[in-house]
Image (cartoon, rainbow, N blue to C red):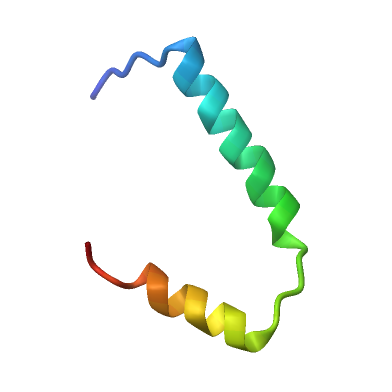
Amino acid sequence: MIKVMLSNEILKYITEIDKNRYQIHDLKIPGSVASKLRKNSKKEC
């Protein structure tokens, strides 16, 4: 088992990400924008 130590700062970021994830879940975005976001998310750096 891997043990991980989370600092308060990292935990704050994780909590903020989780909160924002639920806020944007209900947003309605146009299909063209959704398509672009999906395409960009698959690009390799």
